[in-house]
Amino acid sequence: MSTTFFGASFDAADAARAAAFWAAVLGRRVADGADEHDAVVEAGDPGSGPRLAFHRVPEAKTTKNRFHPDLITSDYEGERGRLLALGATKLHEVVRDGARWTTFADVEGNEFDLIAG
Image (tube, rainbow, N blue to C red; front, side, top):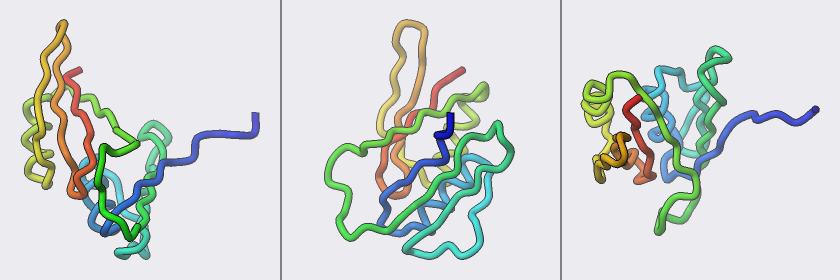
């Protein structure tokens, strides 16, 4: 097969700011040349997942985002605190059928979940 998953692109008001947030969340590096228009979070090692690209768009986020990342951690309480310290906003927490997760908004207002794993 010649097609593989290369990365994910996110719309942003400030690409460098959004990339810096996600690089810190994932323990990755923002590639050289990042600015408010375009920024890339490098993939790192093969097990760290795809690269993430951020591109400035003129319109603000007005509805639910179309891409909703799910993160999983074995240190749920510690990671919740770390994400808040990085600038995430807690939206709500869910405990259901033995599962537990918190939905956050990143620095651009895009929702993502942190799952206890």
